[in-house]
Amino acid sequence: MEKLMIHGGRPLRGTVQISGAKNSAIALLPAAILAESEVALDNLPHLSDVAVYTEILEELGAKVTWTNGQIKIDPSQIRSIPMPNGPVKKLRASYYMMGAMLGRFGEATIGLPGGCNFEPRPIDQHIKGFEALGATVTNEHGSIHLKAKELRGAKIYLDVCSVGATINIMLAAARAKGSTIIENAAKEPEIIDVATLLNSMGASIKGAGTETIRIEGVKEMSGCRHSIIPDRIQAGTYMIAAAATRGDMIIDGVIPKHLEALTAKLIEMGVTVEEIDESIRVLGAPRYEHIDVKALIYPGFPTDMQSPMTSLLTQAEGVSVLSDFVYSNRFKHVPELVRMGAKIRVEGRSAIIEGGELNAAKVKATDLRAGAALVIAGLTVKEGITEVSGVELIDRGYDNLVTNLRSLGADVWRQAE
Ligand code: EPU
Image 1 (tube, rainbow, N blue to C red):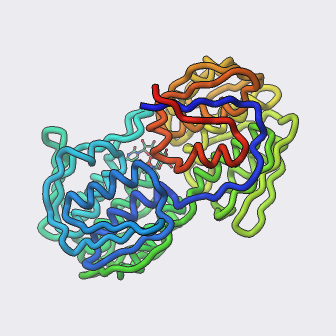
Image 2: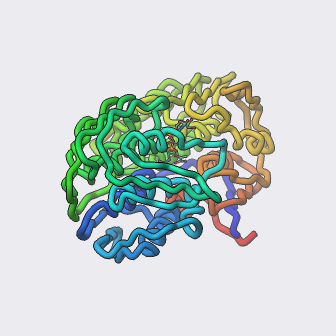
């Protein structure tokens, strides 16, 4: 086990390159199961979650080869075997194995997914979708069993606008018989990325990125080459870090449109943000105004940037209110920030944040984005060393974090616990 040591107080300056999106990658890898021949994915991030997913695919019999940021998956020899335990338990997004295996084999047995545990995260909308497509779904001994004689297209209205359920239903419906319509679908860019890959593999999916997705089932799908979209959450985290340390950073290799909600909020508080083609420059200021932020489904302010934003708002003057309307209690970073001297209280779905200086402390990352929040907080502390334990959670979503931060001028290092 390692911890991250942060000697803060230095403005982050320079350029950081953003890798492919984690939340796309971990849906694109299982999507490859639906093809009968090799799928190549470019711009794959080097993350522990991605490594776990490749383990899952190999366990099923896929041939996986890596070359310089490209992964090739040959799913032709994949078999339908139950996966009650093993790597599926390490990852919440192993729920995509349900849709992908159901789509390819008409059956799946998958251990209940693990992953970031900031609050109970139900999968009832995924199940509702699979059942509408004709699958029988049972939950026995900690595993979900899915079986369908034949998957048939259906009209599915999602009660909750869920990223995971939208993608999972697309995976299962891509090779179902007939038409599927998903209403109240989630609109996140990662959903468009998955639909783009599936269409390149021969699927017929229209409307991804809108609230109505239409899928015309096809009999067969084949391999292709696809480049993963940039990670907007990783990019946003660096933007927030640049602002929090009053730095001057160019975040390169991004789609600025995906970051509009964050950009607008940063500008509102007094940060200078410039969009230059596929880059964003963030220039910090000596003082920031307090603001209110509401985390919503896309294109609203992302819940995944809510925790890092909490750290930034400790640097603003006055009282800011940050509410999360996606998750009701994603505030495990707050007690840790309070240990660093932050004046924050949680009321219902909101964190009320009073600006002020933070101090060094020993804190614990309780989930991926909470960890990112603590790293940003540590980077603002002028004296002493902040120790962030639970780095393995941060490794799930930020590749080369220490190398990147050091190249931006931060004094950070990893140390055995
Ligand atoms: N929900 C239900 N029922 C369901 C599914 C979701 O009630 O069947 C609720 C959830 O409890 C939550 C809301 O709907 O309140 C949204 O959940 P969603 O299904 O959209 O989340 P997810 O697909 O499980 C993905 C990302 C999360 C990100 C959310 C919201 C992946 C693997 N994960 O999760 O990313 O927070 O969308 O944008 O794509 C992260 O990267 O740190 C992370 C947690």
